[in-house]
Image (tube, rainbow, N blue to C red; front, side, top):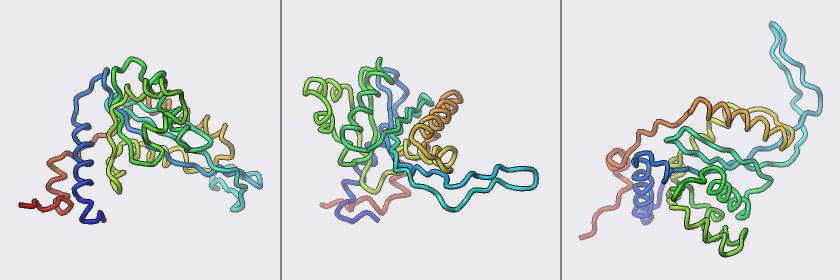
Length: 221
């Protein structure tokens, strides 16, 4: 539950994101959602027994921990396009390099990228100054129009929805190494992009003002 004194801030950030989602598609100002998750890398201690007619596949309950990998999701819903970047960590520098890849490689023709993301301490313009020289950091920042989802409002980020699909369709198994994870995620990513899978976002500002009416502060006269 959002604390009452924070309702106004929550509502303002929510309506801001909902307004962004109502914009028509513009290749020069694409809306891109960013989110991240982690995956425990797990190896087998014994060779799994494959499935055969009448018998399901079996694996030993024991496993070997091989560390954790981080996954950044970049999702452009109106274009049915996404990119997943697998990294060793989730630091400010890692975030900065993902932003650079978005600007220079994934959407190089955009005049301005409308970036929706949650308000993590790493998801800040200042992170780019920790990774690049000031001129380069400023160049990248000037290519972005940033919109933050409110605290406790990560469900407003469509990249979170796409991460849920990734988790269900690709990550719900034992994956032993980062290299294996990269291969499996790349295959999933390619299939989703080829099918132009997207999110049919139906929740609008008018809906919020009705369904989430209790979150709106009382007007002070």
